[in-house]
Image (cartoon, rainbow over all chains, first blue to last red; front, side, top):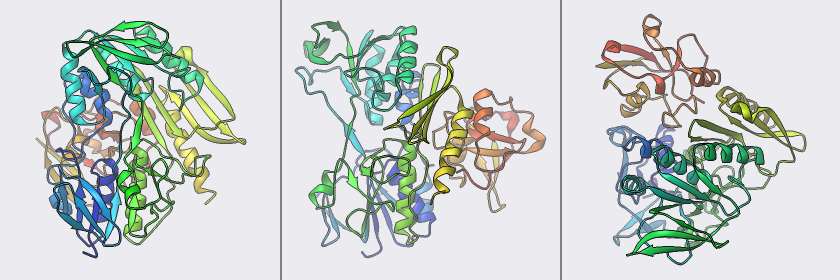
Length: 390
Length: 106
């Protein structure tokens, strides 16, 4: 089927690729495969409003969307192999699906605990709607929660469960919260905010064992010998890109499916986007990045769609991200990794401030707390700076 | 109740709406083109921008500080009638409200 566009993975990137291809005039059949049972849904609320307000999922599109756009959506469908020579996929049910163009938007999966006790009941990960529903249900009956991981997922879940009245402790292996993505001043601000709300934060601490009773979690044991009794554990220690399918069929893979600035993989008929994709980003100091955000998924998917429609245009969308924790709206524009100098504007004690990151004298990113105007201004400035050079 | 969108090509789309839903949710549900809502409605992205019909714009509660700051960053022309549709909560008294989709959201 020479003109069939098949897309493996039906969350933000997959849906956007399908939608933007159709909007861009792609005339052939478009088939969107998702391994979940649900139609594509909002993910950011799963750690926030969903837990706080007795969750219902928000679909990304209206119920008539696929019919109107003439996109065939197949939920509960998993691809297990790609034959690039034949341009065919094998699905889990044994059937074969031919493609003319292929989109890989397989996302990422949660990194799991590897210590003793990791299989006990009461240990939760958070990636999908089903995960969130299980967590919300389990959380109603418990009092003491340990959150493993001081990244965005861990901190948002901690804030939500603390707001619901739980005793919450966060265990972070690194020196500080958000160590990979934010300046120490931002880490300190969030640390103080969480502690002021009654969340116990333990940095430079690792979980070495989860102890159980009758098959359920009862306590976590830390590397310094301390033991924290708990009724529920939520693990947010990062994700691993789902690039195995790509690797198995011989595509270039390196901590994600490697693509160029047109979202093309090492195969001319295959594009990739979303959490599974590693791509050149004008705001990064490294040749490629793999970003885990709604914005990156949507914008790289739009780039992939333009490529598939025969009108390639290089990726040039400024990265942006946000995290809501308690009353704090942290927003990030650009990319700050590798910063050399920073400028702090405002005072964290006022609960409104921003950090401007510079590399070789150039502004590369801005983090702002409770200042949406600063964030929007930064996005514009960072976007224009790159457009001006290309 | 009904909500009316004026699309980018000038045509009108009249949709059924539920009191208590936001205008953005209603737009997404009804596949209204040109309203993106990338942050899913949590007032973080400014891509659900609409122009509210001037006559009824004042019936809405005014934007709070977060919405006002985000409105400064909308991609299309900012007008006095500009609002983020994720912050417009529908009620029966807004039946027939007309919202215009701007030229771009990003």
